[in-house]
Length: 154
Image 1: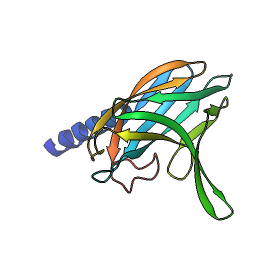
Image 2 (image 1 turned 180 degrees about the vertical axis):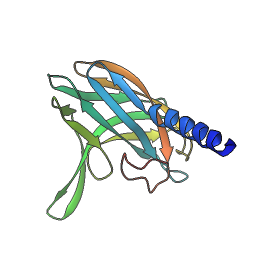
Image 3 (image 1 turned 90 degrees about the vertical axis):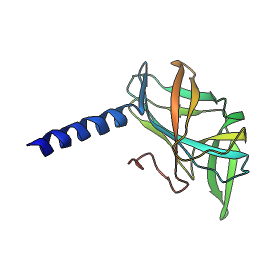
């Protein structure tokens, strides 16, 4: 009987942790913001998340900032003639009823001139700016360098 209570408590605590990584801003739901850990001396890193637009009008992620980096840019990675290219873009549109996935190898938030390496277990504050919905503060969890998708949850 006691083991049932311990299991129920463990499930309740883990559910609370999972919900803590979900943010709502008007019609937008931001899920699982995370960054990959960086090696010592690295001056750049990437942050990733999913944004779902539950509204009836499009919106656009246009900017981000964090005290963990001097500069923050929204980037896109793509293949061009067999060469992986990365470039800064003006924003990422999120159409009504769709999700924009920022993940390694695609759209992402580039953290440039890091003030210190990103270490597993750290949490960094980040402000996301949307064209219509405005600003939202999120906590970006630093995960292992192998973290590759928003579904990479423990």
